[in-house]
Length: 500
Image (cartoon, rainbow, N blue to C red; front, side):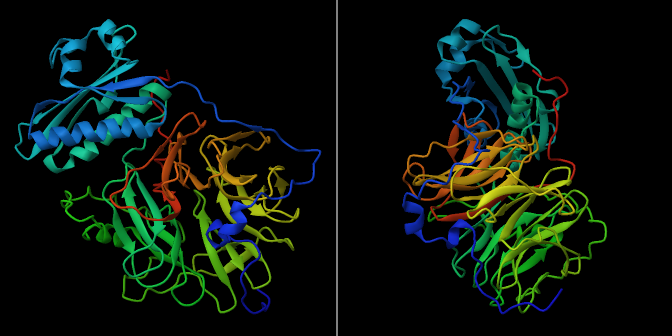
């Protein structure tokens, strides 16, 4: 790389460095462009309801109650159906016969407001250390049982009830949409911690089991799951914005740390073991954990702000040289190897398409931040959005939609756009801020940061078409930034054998 100018803040940053006053003002209307696209509002379709019956309990009562809670909450957070919490009266009314010869009274289920009924039984397995969970899903319109395949019967250690419940709802989503769910995934995010202004945390996708991963003093943001199971994040640890990496073994060790819990909360069961890491071709091993981690990519006159990786192991990152931000390919020694965007404007926030052949990014080359795309080698650069005067945080989903945050009037909303320019809004506006969207690995949901209910910036889940939105209930209130989903190679989209 040529010698670069002294370091300075870039002209275009993620929303967390924008002044709040700027976000609360009504910006001037952008000039009319011949390619202006119409923003389609959220679908607002009515959701079918899943009645989650109380567990037929042959195990510890507290574990049956936990199973009920997790099943109902996962159905709620699916955003593809509504969750109806069943009562013992429902169990008696809608069932003809008890487990294991369980059948349904369709008229009674429909009277309870259900389109589908989810029933479960939990009992001790032959091995005293394990539970056996049996789950059944019924269509209340005709009483037929729908096949949950391998998710119907599970035998697992007694301490893994929460994981077993997630697997059941993975199967429920598979039956209803043709794509298995990822309710057993992990979400990473940044939030204030005991020692750092922005720490890196992880939680289960339902908000449980909050754990801190990076907690030393400073600002740590933009966590990104790597193909080998490790994690890359941006930190101001060395008084310069740099990329840091921890491998899958380090993450596994950190998962054994005591979680951050509110006063009076009980400790949780041990987490399930992480899968063994899959090495990325050409990638060296991450350095061993230490009190002062060594930066993966850093430079005296460079600022690294977030990165993304394609399925082939290639890395690209936003690099600011003091005058502007560009999108660079970087090698596994942490060195910039090629300027991909190579434009006098600010280009940042890259996101690979699932196949790795295209990159979405933000550029202000038109005078205001808009969403652009380019091929993996930097060619074919094309503008996708033509509305709003602030668009940021693109994330490319499995189904070809790019989620991003865009400003209309005084509101920041989550929207999607396709390569053909088809746009849709997922959040309701209302003068609030909804931003930093990231697709779930299965492409059916988006996690994002929002204050849309006026209760502070929390993590929310939205359906891919905006038909429903739900906040994730966390163990403690906080201010959240830059969420991202766990992504393990080969497990992003799992198709159901028979689509509905």
